[in-house]
Image (spheres, one colour):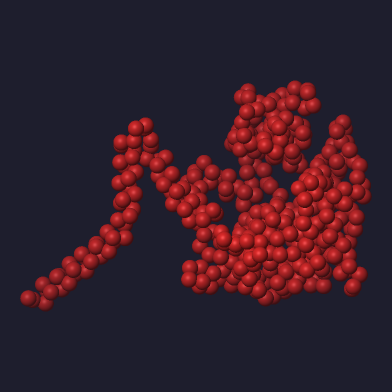
Length: 435
């Protein structure tokens, strides 16, 4: 056999091997495609290949863990808008059954289209563009309220028995992720406690792209005015890991913030603080958490606790210590998100709660010694009511001409209803006195 023939034979064999291994790799994909085609052609009722494909992706991702999922084209825009902190709509928050007997407006963003149109907390939504929504769930109602910027929506409202017809135009709404102790009459947030103005209070409800900047801006405005900081992360389900890292970096001069481990417990990334802080290192901090504080909020609580930069007050956090990647599919119209790593705070302690873990096992973030405050359901409701009251525009003189406006509560006497916040204040005041 000539040298040329031998080379051709070698190349052919290599090509055959490549085809064999490639075919073996994609055989499961072919099987799925065959099943989708067969079902689409032969199922007793008509079903589209697109619906079957979406169902297949949902099934694959749902089988991995409770946090992996397929984000359809319909949901992707809302998914992204949460972390971008911007969406198109009226700027109104609604609740319905089972938490409310009817679809009810519970808050309007200051200076939003809903606010300017005169929609008020407590208004019942009966109709949207002439369609009766009383039997719809909250998600359906929210979807109908949202829409393209510049379009109008007409709401049929029941306000204490009076029927109103309110027209509003949708706009881009920039959502604040950090709120303060109460709203001022001009609609901005007051970040100093009424009971003790030397203590700053910031509540972050999610970790989006702008959250760290919001916290930094708020604390910059208080330089020279405060001796302590409360960072309230209760009911914060997480968000962007990068946002959590940036927030920790605001309070630390150096050292480890968080590390991530992938398959085989391989360390993928270790993230450290950079020089410079938004408040001096001598300023004590309290972080408040509860059982709904999860993921990125646990990164912040665990980091600041492990680095002895903050007291953690409240109760054990949720226990979601996984890092998820969001991968665009279908040309960027949809996405898949799945767990690619677990994160670990500076102590190296496991945060993620495994399916078989009990309360006796180590997971989540625990309060600092002497700072645990467990709440009954009734106490939790009272604390939630206080928080909503503090942010209600009608309670702070923003609409003095409104008959519902009430500028009472000048000294925040409802603070006694929030035992976890009261504990954080007590511990910080003791720290301040020590110095």
